[in-house]
Image (cartoon, rainbow, N blue to C red):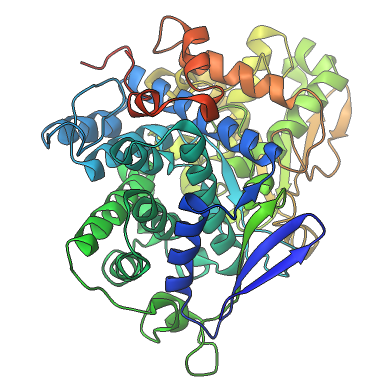
Length: 512
């Protein structure tokens, strides 16, 4: 049986490795979303709303600039119409479509620019610190289901938190990346569970849906490999959320999927990390029920368009520019930039293939491009603050990708693996050191950056203002009134069921 554990003001549900965790996740989602025992703290709900708002601004910007995948999938979704009340809507539309298709289109828009929230699964309290990646990509699953179920904003917000709790805790317990499986699988499990809970599925049906996802729809990291990345990188979460909703709807129609799949020796968890005993999964799973210790409180904001593992280098660069004005006044003296970092960042955003990015999807995963572009912006503006150097979609357009100054700066960047000293500090932080060799100043160093701005353990007072600045800057690319948009997605807990149903129905530039 599952255990309830109380610790100070927090309460947790413990799903043991010796029990049916798929059924346990289902029962947790139903109770958390629909019952009366969950009691998340106000700070947790506020953080959830903040991450949702952030994802919406990212979606608006992606659609406004005409990004390919979001528009392809939005057009696809609009071909799958259904009766009002039985479907969901895409961003910038009032047309009811099949919910899995709305989820596909909307999740893709939120993730396309790779700029919304991030987690690196890390929980020293439980000892689960696998560091699996993840992103706050899955809120459209909740909005779609809530619209169908007629839920108000308070229940919708709680369901968003539930989804992030499930995927965030799984990311602490199991490193999908270690087996070349894409991190979106954790989000797909959570999506199936929460979607089912909202629309009235039983625990048995949700268990079947989770089994279907894990048996039929496992994406590998081929999505993110190759010399030039494609639309698949940004759409991975969207496709997995689509199949999660599809599996849940299929299970509710009576289709029975694999049961007890976390302990299934041929499913991904036991297959890749055999627990050594029969009828066990590789981990216990702890899910918060009450208090402030939810996984979302350990998730991180991006303050612009960049792969989050580059945040330490951006932070170090901006700090050095602020401390050494001569770096901007005497740019010809710049001789070399050396970035020392940990694995897996060194292998992902330091991949030699990404020294010559030709697509936006490759450039925003290229450390040398990100840092060179940030430095070029500083040189052009003669300014060195996070607000001024916010990386925007235009910094990754076709002209920016081949800018001669950016390319010259890229050639001056050396990327170094810091070895065990750095590796051991991840995923607690993003251990990075940035050094600049300058003809006049000599060598200046950022020192070790662990918690850059936006990181959950960064305590700088201006982070909320920078998140708001990012929201406005991205949103203004696609809407005329950013104040109105901000109001639409603020105080979600007070929204009515009709307001939730039309939450994504607002005009966006470039969307018919």
